[in-house]
Amino acid sequence: MFLTHLQRITKSGLLSYKRNGWLSTATVLVMVLMLFVIGNLIFMGALAGVILSSFESKVDISVYFLPDANEHTITSIKNEIETLPDVRDITYISRDRALELFRERHKGNQLISAALEEIGDNPLQASLNIRAKDPSRYAAISEFLLHKNYKEIDKINYFENQQVIERMGAIFRAVRGSGMFLAFFLAFIAILVTFNTIRLAIYTMREEIGIMRLVGATKWFIRGPFIVSGVLYGVTAALITLMLFFPLIWLASPRLAVLVPEFDIFRYFLQNLVLFSLLMFGGGISIGVISSLIAIRRYLRV
Amino acid sequence: MIFFDNVSKIYNHHSVALKNVTLKVDPKDFIFLVGSSGAGKTTLLKLLIREEQPTDGKIFLDGVEVTNTDVNDLHMIRRRVGTVFQDYKLLPTKTAYENISFVMEAAGRADAEIEEDVPEVLELVGLSDKRDNFPHQLSGGEKQRVAIARALVNRPDVILADEPTGDLDPINTLEIIKLLQKINELGTTIVLSTHNKEIVNSSDKRVVLLDKGEIISDKEKGKYLLI
Image 1 (cartoon, chains in turn cyan, brown):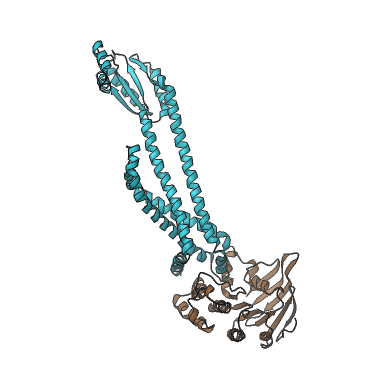
Image 2 (image 1 turned 180 degrees about the horizontal axis):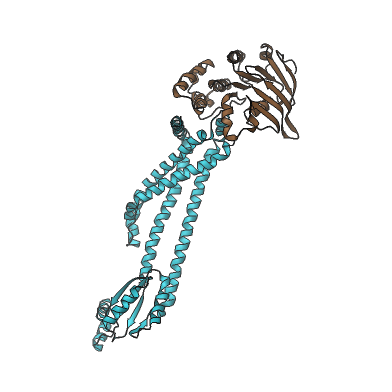
Protein backbone atom coordinates (compact mmCIF):
# COMPACT_ATOMS: atom_id res chain seq x y z
CA MET A 1 0.00 0.00 0.00
CA PHE A 2 2.75 2.39 1.01
CA LEU A 3 4.80 1.41 -2.04
CA THR A 4 1.83 1.87 -4.36
CA HIS A 5 1.28 5.34 -2.90
CA LEU A 6 4.97 6.17 -3.22
CA GLN A 7 5.00 5.05 -6.81
CA ARG A 8 1.85 7.06 -7.64
CA ILE A 9 3.17 10.14 -5.90
CA THR A 10 6.48 9.94 -7.75
CA LYS A 11 4.77 9.47 -11.08
CA SER A 12 2.41 12.34 -10.45
CA GLY A 13 5.28 14.60 -9.35
CA LEU A 14 7.27 13.83 -12.49
CA LEU A 15 4.21 14.40 -14.65
CA SER A 16 3.38 17.77 -13.11
CA TYR A 17 7.03 18.84 -13.41
CA LYS A 18 6.80 18.05 -17.12
CA ARG A 19 3.33 19.50 -17.74
CA ASN A 20 3.99 22.75 -15.92
CA GLY A 21 6.94 23.23 -18.22
CA TRP A 22 7.19 27.00 -18.04
CA LEU A 23 6.64 27.19 -14.34
CA SER A 24 9.21 24.46 -13.73
CA THR A 25 11.73 26.16 -15.99
CA ALA A 26 11.26 29.51 -14.28
CA THR A 27 11.58 27.98 -10.83
CA VAL A 28 14.68 26.04 -11.82
CA LEU A 29 16.26 29.17 -13.29
CA VAL A 30 15.65 31.19 -10.15
CA MET A 31 17.11 28.34 -8.15
CA VAL A 32 20.16 28.25 -10.44
CA LEU A 33 20.58 31.94 -9.71
CA MET A 34 20.40 31.26 -5.99
CA LEU A 35 22.92 28.41 -6.11
CA PHE A 36 25.16 30.48 -8.36
CA VAL A 37 25.18 33.32 -5.85
CA ILE A 38 25.87 30.93 -2.99
CA GLY A 39 28.62 29.20 -4.96
CA ASN A 40 30.24 32.51 -5.79
CA LEU A 41 30.11 33.53 -2.16
CA ILE A 42 31.96 30.37 -1.26
CA PHE A 43 34.70 31.07 -3.80
CA MET A 44 34.90 34.70 -2.74
CA GLY A 45 35.23 33.57 0.84
CA ALA A 46 38.06 31.21 -0.01
CA LEU A 47 39.79 33.87 -2.09
CA ALA A 48 39.42 36.51 0.60
CA GLY A 49 40.74 34.05 3.15
CA VAL A 50 43.86 33.40 1.07
CA ILE A 51 44.45 37.09 0.47
CA LEU A 52 43.93 37.99 4.11
CA SER A 53 46.21 35.29 5.44
CA SER A 54 48.88 36.22 2.95
CA PHE A 55 48.67 39.77 4.28
CA GLU A 56 48.63 38.52 7.81
CA SER A 57 51.70 36.36 7.31
CA LYS A 58 53.59 39.47 6.24
CA VAL A 59 53.02 41.03 9.63
CA ASP A 60 55.60 39.93 12.20
CA ILE A 61 57.72 41.29 15.03
CA SER A 62 61.47 41.11 15.32
CA VAL A 63 63.48 40.84 18.49
CA TYR A 64 67.01 42.26 18.06
CA PHE A 65 69.85 41.05 20.21
CA LEU A 66 72.90 42.90 21.43
CA PRO A 67 76.03 42.10 19.38
CA ASP A 68 77.62 40.14 22.21
CA ALA A 69 74.65 37.79 22.72
CA ASN A 70 75.78 34.26 21.94
CA GLU A 71 73.87 31.85 19.79
CA HIS A 72 73.24 29.43 22.64
CA THR A 73 71.38 32.02 24.70
CA ILE A 74 69.39 33.12 21.69
CA THR A 75 68.37 29.51 20.96
CA SER A 76 67.18 29.01 24.52
CA ILE A 77 65.14 32.23 24.35
CA LYS A 78 63.73 31.05 21.04
CA ASN A 79 62.70 27.73 22.61
CA GLU A 80 61.01 29.59 25.41
CA ILE A 81 59.03 31.80 23.06
CA GLU A 82 58.00 28.76 21.01
CA THR A 83 56.11 27.38 23.99
CA LEU A 84 53.72 30.35 23.89
CA PRO A 85 50.38 29.21 22.47
CA ASP A 86 49.94 32.36 20.37
CA VAL A 87 53.11 31.87 18.34
CA ARG A 88 52.87 30.38 14.88
CA ASP A 89 56.54 30.23 14.02
CA ILE A 90 59.92 31.77 14.80
CA THR A 91 62.90 32.17 12.53
CA TYR A 92 66.34 32.83 13.85
CA ILE A 93 68.51 35.12 11.76
CA SER A 94 72.13 35.22 12.84
CA ARG A 95 74.34 38.26 12.37
CA ASP A 96 76.05 36.65 9.36
CA ARG A 97 72.74 35.70 7.80
CA ALA A 98 71.45 39.22 8.40
CA LEU A 99 74.45 40.68 6.61
CA GLU A 100 74.01 38.25 3.75
CA LEU A 101 70.35 39.21 3.38
CA PHE A 102 71.19 42.89 3.62
CA ARG A 103 73.87 42.59 0.92
CA GLU A 104 71.50 40.72 -1.34
CA ARG A 105 68.76 43.28 -0.90
CA HIS A 106 71.07 46.18 -1.77
CA LYS A 107 73.09 44.39 -4.44
CA GLY A 108 72.94 47.20 -6.96
CA ASN A 109 73.54 50.01 -4.53
CA GLN A 110 77.17 51.13 -4.76
CA LEU A 111 76.89 53.54 -1.86
CA ILE A 112 75.73 50.94 0.63
CA SER A 113 78.35 48.38 -0.44
CA ALA A 114 81.02 51.07 -0.08
CA ALA A 115 79.72 52.01 3.37
CA LEU A 116 79.79 48.38 4.46
CA GLU A 117 83.38 48.05 3.26
CA GLU A 118 84.24 51.18 5.16
CA ILE A 119 82.88 49.83 8.43
CA GLY A 120 84.70 46.55 7.95
CA ASP A 121 82.92 44.82 10.81
CA ASN A 122 79.34 43.41 10.61
CA PRO A 123 77.14 46.18 11.99
CA LEU A 124 73.93 44.10 11.97
CA GLN A 125 72.24 42.44 14.87
CA ALA A 126 71.04 38.86 15.27
CA SER A 127 67.26 38.67 15.48
CA LEU A 128 64.26 36.40 15.98
CA ASN A 129 61.31 36.93 13.66
CA ILE A 130 58.11 35.97 15.38
CA ARG A 131 54.79 35.42 13.64
CA ALA A 132 51.67 35.09 15.73
CA LYS A 133 48.64 32.95 14.91
CA ASP A 134 46.52 36.05 15.23
CA PRO A 135 47.79 39.61 14.65
CA SER A 136 46.03 40.80 17.78
CA ARG A 137 48.37 38.64 19.89
CA TYR A 138 51.57 40.49 19.08
CA ALA A 139 51.04 42.80 22.01
CA ALA A 140 50.85 39.87 24.43
CA ILE A 141 53.97 38.24 22.99
CA SER A 142 55.91 41.50 23.23
CA GLU A 143 54.70 42.07 26.76
CA PHE A 144 55.88 38.60 27.67
CA LEU A 145 59.38 39.32 26.34
CA LEU A 146 59.53 42.68 28.01
CA HIS A 147 58.38 41.17 31.25
CA LYS A 148 61.12 38.49 31.11
CA ASN A 149 63.62 41.30 30.84
CA TYR A 150 66.33 39.35 29.00
CA LYS A 151 69.51 41.37 29.18
CA GLU A 152 70.62 40.14 25.73
CA ILE A 153 67.65 41.75 24.00
CA ASP A 154 68.37 45.14 22.56
CA LYS A 155 64.95 46.05 21.25
CA ILE A 156 61.62 44.65 20.13
CA ASN A 157 60.30 46.33 17.02
CA TYR A 158 56.68 45.75 17.97
CA PHE A 159 56.73 48.84 20.09
CA GLU A 160 57.96 50.82 17.09
CA ASN A 161 55.34 49.41 14.73
CA GLN A 162 52.62 48.94 17.31
CA GLN A 163 50.13 51.29 15.69
CA VAL A 164 50.50 49.83 12.23
CA ILE A 165 50.21 46.26 13.45
CA GLU A 166 47.15 47.02 15.54
CA ARG A 167 45.48 48.84 12.69
CA MET A 168 46.18 46.00 10.29
CA GLY A 169 44.71 43.56 12.78
CA ALA A 170 41.57 45.69 13.09
CA ILE A 171 41.21 45.88 9.31
CA PHE A 172 41.55 42.11 8.93
CA ARG A 173 38.91 41.53 11.56
CA ALA A 174 36.56 44.06 10.00
CA VAL A 175 36.97 42.58 6.50
CA ARG A 176 36.35 39.07 7.80
CA GLY A 177 33.32 40.14 9.83
CA SER A 178 31.62 42.29 7.23
CA GLY A 179 32.43 39.79 4.47
CA MET A 180 30.73 37.07 6.44
CA PHE A 181 27.73 39.29 7.11
CA LEU A 182 27.48 40.28 3.45
CA ALA A 183 27.72 36.66 2.36
CA PHE A 184 24.95 35.59 4.72
CA PHE A 185 22.83 38.52 3.70
CA LEU A 186 23.17 37.78 -0.02
CA ALA A 187 22.58 34.08 0.53
CA PHE A 188 19.50 34.93 2.57
CA ILE A 189 18.08 37.11 -0.21
CA ALA A 190 18.78 34.45 -2.82
CA ILE A 191 16.97 31.88 -0.70
CA LEU A 192 14.06 34.24 -0.14
CA VAL A 193 13.64 34.87 -3.87
CA THR A 194 13.61 31.13 -4.54
CA PHE A 195 11.13 30.54 -1.76
CA ASN A 196 8.81 33.17 -3.20
CA THR A 197 9.03 31.73 -6.69
CA ILE A 198 8.03 28.32 -5.42
CA ARG A 199 5.29 29.86 -3.34
CA LEU A 200 3.95 31.56 -6.45
CA ALA A 201 4.11 28.31 -8.39
CA ILE A 202 2.07 26.58 -5.71
CA TYR A 203 -0.27 29.54 -5.41
CA THR A 204 -1.28 28.98 -9.04
CA MET A 205 -2.27 25.44 -8.08
CA ARG A 206 -4.14 26.30 -4.90
CA GLU A 207 -7.52 25.43 -6.38
CA GLU A 208 -6.31 22.06 -7.52
CA ILE A 209 -5.01 21.35 -4.05
CA GLY A 210 -8.43 22.19 -2.62
CA ILE A 211 -10.18 19.97 -5.16
CA MET A 212 -7.91 17.05 -4.33
CA ARG A 213 -8.86 17.40 -0.69
CA LEU A 214 -12.57 17.54 -1.52
CA VAL A 215 -12.47 14.34 -3.55
CA GLY A 216 -10.88 12.42 -0.70
CA ALA A 217 -7.10 12.67 -0.99
CA THR A 218 -5.08 12.71 2.23
CA LYS A 219 -2.75 15.62 2.90
CA TRP A 220 0.34 13.51 2.26
CA PHE A 221 -1.01 12.16 -0.98
CA ILE A 222 -1.33 15.77 -2.18
CA ARG A 223 1.95 16.98 -0.71
CA GLY A 224 3.89 14.06 -2.13
CA PRO A 225 4.02 15.14 -5.79
CA PHE A 226 4.99 18.67 -4.75
CA ILE A 227 7.89 17.25 -2.74
CA VAL A 228 8.93 15.20 -5.76
CA SER A 229 8.80 18.32 -7.92
CA GLY A 230 10.79 20.22 -5.29
CA VAL A 231 13.49 17.54 -5.36
CA LEU A 232 13.54 17.66 -9.15
CA TYR A 233 13.88 21.46 -9.15
CA GLY A 234 16.80 21.15 -6.76
CA VAL A 235 18.58 18.42 -8.71
CA THR A 236 18.14 20.13 -12.07
CA ALA A 237 19.25 23.49 -10.69
CA ALA A 238 22.30 21.98 -8.99
CA LEU A 239 23.32 20.20 -12.20
CA ILE A 240 22.96 23.37 -14.26
CA THR A 241 24.89 25.42 -11.70
CA LEU A 242 27.75 22.92 -11.59
CA MET A 243 27.89 22.88 -15.36
CA LEU A 244 28.06 26.67 -15.33
CA PHE A 245 30.83 26.78 -12.75
CA PHE A 246 33.16 24.42 -14.61
CA PRO A 247 33.90 26.62 -17.64
CA LEU A 248 33.58 29.87 -15.69
CA ILE A 249 36.14 28.92 -13.09
CA TRP A 250 38.39 27.40 -15.71
CA LEU A 251 38.32 30.71 -17.57
CA ALA A 252 38.70 32.82 -14.44
CA SER A 253 41.56 30.79 -13.00
CA PRO A 254 44.51 32.16 -15.07
CA ARG A 255 43.22 35.73 -14.78
CA LEU A 256 42.90 35.44 -11.04
CA ALA A 257 46.32 33.85 -10.77
CA VAL A 258 47.82 37.10 -12.05
CA LEU A 259 46.27 38.99 -9.14
CA VAL A 260 46.64 36.39 -6.42
CA PRO A 261 49.38 33.94 -7.38
CA GLU A 262 49.00 31.88 -4.24
CA PHE A 263 45.39 30.92 -5.04
CA ASP A 264 44.61 28.49 -7.86
CA ILE A 265 40.85 28.68 -7.95
CA PHE A 266 40.36 25.87 -10.47
CA ARG A 267 42.40 23.52 -8.32
CA TYR A 268 40.49 24.66 -5.26
CA PHE A 269 37.25 23.91 -7.14
CA LEU A 270 38.40 20.43 -8.18
CA GLN A 271 39.72 19.64 -4.72
CA ASN A 272 36.43 20.59 -3.13
CA LEU A 273 34.22 19.31 -5.94
CA VAL A 274 32.54 16.59 -3.90
CA LEU A 275 31.78 18.89 -1.01
CA PHE A 276 30.73 21.67 -3.36
CA SER A 277 28.41 19.36 -5.32
CA LEU A 278 26.91 18.08 -2.10
CA LEU A 279 26.25 21.64 -1.05
CA MET A 280 24.65 22.53 -4.39
CA PHE A 281 22.43 19.44 -4.45
CA GLY A 282 21.69 19.61 -0.75
CA GLY A 283 20.93 23.34 -0.91
CA GLY A 284 18.77 23.03 -4.02
CA ILE A 285 16.81 20.03 -2.83
CA SER A 286 16.23 21.31 0.67
CA ILE A 287 15.11 24.75 -0.49
CA GLY A 288 12.84 23.10 -3.09
CA VAL A 289 11.26 20.73 -0.62
CA ILE A 290 11.05 23.04 2.39
CA SER A 291 9.58 25.91 0.35
CA SER A 292 7.02 23.56 -1.18
CA LEU A 293 6.02 22.20 2.21
CA ILE A 294 5.62 25.66 3.72
CA ALA A 295 3.80 27.07 0.70
CA ILE A 296 1.33 24.22 0.38
CA ARG A 297 0.36 24.17 4.05
CA ARG A 298 -2.35 26.78 3.99
CA TYR A 299 -4.07 25.35 0.90
CA LEU A 300 -4.37 21.94 2.53
CA ARG A 301 -6.54 23.24 5.34
CA VAL A 302 -9.67 22.29 3.45
CA MET B 1 -27.69 7.74 6.78
CA ILE B 2 -27.53 11.54 6.56
CA PHE B 3 -28.83 13.71 9.33
CA PHE B 4 -28.80 17.49 9.51
CA ASP B 5 -29.63 18.45 13.06
CA ASN B 6 -30.92 22.01 13.28
CA VAL B 7 -28.20 23.36 11.06
CA SER B 8 -27.68 27.06 10.34
CA LYS B 9 -25.10 28.71 8.15
CA ILE B 10 -24.78 32.45 8.45
CA TYR B 11 -22.11 34.20 6.37
CA ASN B 12 -22.99 37.57 7.84
CA HIS B 13 -26.18 39.13 9.12
CA HIS B 14 -27.19 40.16 5.60
CA SER B 15 -26.67 36.73 4.22
CA VAL B 16 -28.21 33.75 5.93
CA ALA B 17 -27.60 30.68 3.79
CA LEU B 18 -29.37 28.11 5.94
CA LYS B 19 -31.68 28.56 8.90
CA ASN B 20 -32.46 25.75 11.36
CA VAL B 21 -32.47 23.02 8.78
CA THR B 22 -33.27 19.54 10.01
CA LEU B 23 -33.18 16.88 7.35
CA LYS B 24 -32.97 13.13 7.47
CA VAL B 25 -32.03 11.06 4.47
CA ASP B 26 -32.40 7.26 4.75
CA PRO B 27 -30.08 4.79 3.08
CA LYS B 28 -30.94 4.15 -0.56
CA ASP B 29 -33.07 7.28 -0.70
CA PHE B 30 -33.20 9.41 -3.83
CA ILE B 31 -34.10 12.99 -3.03
CA PHE B 32 -34.41 16.11 -5.11
CA LEU B 33 -33.30 19.32 -3.49
CA VAL B 34 -35.12 22.13 -5.24
CA GLY B 35 -35.47 25.84 -4.84
CA SER B 36 -34.49 29.03 -6.58
CA SER B 37 -30.89 30.01 -6.73
CA GLY B 38 -29.65 31.34 -3.42
CA ALA B 39 -32.07 29.12 -1.55
CA GLY B 40 -29.25 27.24 0.14
CA LYS B 41 -29.04 24.02 -1.89
CA THR B 42 -25.34 24.25 -2.62
CA THR B 43 -24.52 25.28 0.94
CA LEU B 44 -26.35 22.23 2.24
CA LEU B 45 -24.25 19.95 0.05
CA LYS B 46 -21.02 21.78 0.90
CA LEU B 47 -21.67 21.28 4.59
CA LEU B 48 -22.03 17.52 4.20
CA ILE B 49 -18.49 17.13 2.85
CA ARG B 50 -17.18 19.83 5.20
CA GLU B 51 -16.20 22.14 2.40
CA GLU B 52 -17.71 24.56 4.87
CA GLN B 53 -18.59 24.42 8.55
CA PRO B 54 -22.06 25.30 9.79
CA THR B 55 -22.49 28.24 12.14
CA ASP B 56 -24.74 26.13 14.29
CA GLY B 57 -25.99 22.56 14.49
CA LYS B 58 -24.58 19.13 13.80
CA ILE B 59 -24.35 16.94 10.74
CA PHE B 60 -24.03 13.16 10.79
CA LEU B 61 -23.09 10.69 8.12
CA ASP B 62 -23.83 7.11 9.16
CA GLY B 63 -23.56 8.02 12.81
CA VAL B 64 -20.22 9.85 12.37
CA GLU B 65 -20.40 13.51 13.23
CA VAL B 66 -19.06 15.31 10.15
CA THR B 67 -19.01 18.66 11.90
CA ASN B 68 -16.73 17.30 14.59
CA THR B 69 -14.32 15.25 12.47
CA ASP B 70 -10.62 16.09 12.61
CA VAL B 71 -9.34 17.84 9.48
CA ASN B 72 -6.83 15.04 8.98
CA ASP B 73 -9.61 12.46 8.87
CA LEU B 74 -11.93 14.29 6.50
CA HIS B 75 -10.79 12.19 3.55
CA MET B 76 -12.53 9.20 5.13
CA ILE B 77 -15.86 11.02 4.88
CA ARG B 78 -15.17 12.42 1.45
CA ARG B 79 -14.33 8.99 0.04
CA ARG B 80 -17.75 7.73 1.09
CA VAL B 81 -19.48 10.63 -0.62
CA GLY B 82 -19.14 11.11 -4.36
CA THR B 83 -19.75 14.73 -5.24
CA VAL B 84 -20.68 16.25 -8.57
CA PHE B 85 -19.80 19.91 -8.07
CA GLN B 86 -21.79 22.64 -9.71
CA ASP B 87 -18.56 24.11 -11.09
CA TYR B 88 -17.25 20.56 -11.84
CA LYS B 89 -13.98 21.12 -9.95
CA LEU B 90 -11.94 19.07 -12.40
CA LEU B 91 -8.16 19.14 -12.05
CA PRO B 92 -7.03 21.32 -14.96
CA THR B 93 -3.63 19.68 -15.41
CA LYS B 94 -5.03 16.17 -15.58
CA THR B 95 -6.80 14.48 -18.47
CA ALA B 96 -10.36 13.18 -18.21
CA TYR B 97 -8.99 9.71 -17.52
CA GLU B 98 -6.55 10.98 -14.87
CA ASN B 99 -9.21 13.09 -13.18
CA ILE B 100 -11.21 9.94 -12.62
CA SER B 101 -8.29 7.66 -11.80
CA PHE B 102 -7.01 10.23 -9.28
CA VAL B 103 -9.80 9.57 -6.79
CA MET B 104 -9.21 5.84 -7.06
CA GLU B 105 -5.47 6.27 -6.58
CA ALA B 106 -6.03 8.56 -3.62
CA ALA B 107 -8.31 5.95 -2.09
CA GLY B 108 -5.57 3.37 -2.50
CA ARG B 109 -7.27 1.16 -5.09
CA ALA B 110 -5.18 -1.40 -6.96
CA ASP B 111 -3.86 -0.55 -10.40
CA ALA B 112 -5.74 -3.45 -11.99
CA GLU B 113 -8.98 -2.20 -10.53
CA ILE B 114 -8.32 1.32 -11.77
CA GLU B 115 -7.47 0.15 -15.26
CA GLU B 116 -10.71 -1.77 -15.38
CA ASP B 117 -13.10 0.70 -13.74
CA VAL B 118 -12.08 4.02 -15.27
CA PRO B 119 -12.70 3.04 -18.90
CA GLU B 120 -15.96 1.51 -17.78
CA VAL B 121 -17.33 4.71 -16.21
CA LEU B 122 -16.02 6.76 -19.13
CA GLU B 123 -18.04 4.48 -21.38
CA LEU B 124 -21.02 4.89 -19.06
CA VAL B 125 -21.01 8.69 -19.42
CA GLY B 126 -20.20 8.45 -23.13
CA LEU B 127 -16.72 9.94 -23.07
CA SER B 128 -14.51 7.02 -24.07
CA ASP B 129 -13.17 8.94 -27.03
CA LYS B 130 -12.25 11.98 -24.89
CA ARG B 131 -10.31 10.13 -22.22
CA ASP B 132 -7.03 11.89 -22.98
CA ASN B 133 -8.48 15.39 -23.28
CA PHE B 134 -7.72 18.00 -20.66
CA PRO B 135 -10.67 19.86 -19.09
CA HIS B 136 -10.03 22.95 -21.21
CA GLN B 137 -10.45 20.78 -24.29
CA LEU B 138 -13.90 19.64 -23.19
CA SER B 139 -17.27 21.35 -23.52
CA GLY B 140 -19.33 22.26 -20.45
CA GLY B 141 -21.50 19.19 -20.81
CA GLU B 142 -18.48 16.94 -21.25
CA LYS B 143 -16.83 18.37 -18.17
CA GLN B 144 -20.01 17.76 -16.26
CA ARG B 145 -20.02 14.15 -17.37
CA VAL B 146 -16.40 13.69 -16.29
CA ALA B 147 -17.41 15.10 -12.90
CA ILE B 148 -20.26 12.61 -12.73
CA ALA B 149 -17.97 9.74 -13.70
CA ARG B 150 -15.52 10.78 -11.01
CA ALA B 151 -18.27 10.83 -8.40
CA LEU B 152 -19.41 7.34 -9.36
CA VAL B 153 -16.17 5.53 -9.79
CA ASN B 154 -15.35 4.80 -6.15
CA ARG B 155 -18.82 3.32 -5.62
CA PRO B 156 -19.58 5.71 -2.77
CA ASP B 157 -22.41 5.23 -0.28
CA VAL B 158 -23.81 8.62 -1.14
CA ILE B 159 -23.73 10.70 -4.28
CA LEU B 160 -24.28 14.44 -3.96
CA ALA B 161 -25.03 16.04 -7.27
CA ASP B 162 -25.23 19.80 -7.45
CA GLU B 163 -27.05 20.73 -10.64
CA PRO B 164 -25.49 17.79 -12.45
CA THR B 165 -27.52 18.41 -15.57
CA GLY B 166 -27.17 22.18 -15.73
CA ASP B 167 -24.93 22.10 -18.77
CA LEU B 168 -26.43 19.11 -20.51
CA ASP B 169 -28.84 19.00 -23.43
CA PRO B 170 -32.23 17.33 -22.83
CA ILE B 171 -31.13 13.97 -24.21
CA ASN B 172 -28.01 13.84 -22.09
CA THR B 173 -29.96 15.09 -19.09
CA LEU B 174 -32.41 12.25 -19.39
CA GLU B 175 -29.62 9.72 -19.69
CA ILE B 176 -27.77 11.02 -16.68
CA ILE B 177 -30.91 10.98 -14.56
CA LYS B 178 -31.63 7.43 -15.69
CA LEU B 179 -28.06 6.50 -14.82
CA LEU B 180 -28.36 8.02 -11.35
CA GLN B 181 -31.66 6.23 -10.81
CA LYS B 182 -30.07 2.95 -11.79
CA ILE B 183 -27.20 3.54 -9.39
CA ASN B 184 -29.75 4.38 -6.73
CA GLU B 185 -31.56 1.10 -7.36
CA LEU B 186 -28.28 -0.71 -6.80
CA GLY B 187 -28.18 0.79 -3.30
CA THR B 188 -26.51 4.20 -3.43
CA THR B 189 -28.13 7.14 -1.66
CA ILE B 190 -28.53 10.11 -3.96
CA VAL B 191 -29.10 13.76 -3.16
CA LEU B 192 -29.60 15.81 -6.29
CA SER B 193 -30.11 19.55 -6.39
CA THR B 194 -31.72 20.99 -9.46
CA HIS B 195 -33.74 23.72 -11.09
CA ASN B 196 -35.11 21.43 -13.71
CA LYS B 197 -38.84 20.94 -13.09
CA GLU B 198 -39.27 18.31 -15.76
CA ILE B 199 -36.85 15.82 -14.31
CA VAL B 200 -38.29 16.29 -10.83
CA ASN B 201 -41.85 15.95 -11.92
CA SER B 202 -41.24 12.92 -14.10
CA SER B 203 -39.40 10.99 -11.42
CA ASP B 204 -41.79 10.42 -8.57
CA LYS B 205 -39.14 10.82 -5.88
CA ARG B 206 -38.90 12.65 -2.58
CA VAL B 207 -38.68 16.40 -3.10
CA VAL B 208 -37.28 18.85 -0.54
CA LEU B 209 -38.00 22.49 -1.31
CA LEU B 210 -35.70 25.13 0.11
CA ASP B 211 -36.45 28.82 0.19
CA LYS B 212 -34.24 31.50 1.71
CA GLY B 213 -32.36 28.92 3.70
CA GLU B 214 -35.35 27.14 5.14
CA ILE B 215 -37.05 23.88 4.24
CA ILE B 216 -40.59 24.86 3.31
CA SER B 217 -41.78 21.51 2.06
CA ASP B 218 -40.59 17.93 2.17
CA LYS B 219 -42.78 15.41 0.33
CA GLU B 220 -42.42 11.80 -0.69
CA LYS B 221 -43.23 11.50 -4.40
CA GLY B 222 -43.34 15.25 -4.56
CA LYS B 223 -43.65 17.65 -7.40
CA TYR B 224 -41.79 20.84 -8.11
CA LEU B 225 -44.59 23.26 -8.67
CA LEU B 226 -43.61 26.58 -7.21
CA ILE B 227 -41.76 29.33 -8.92
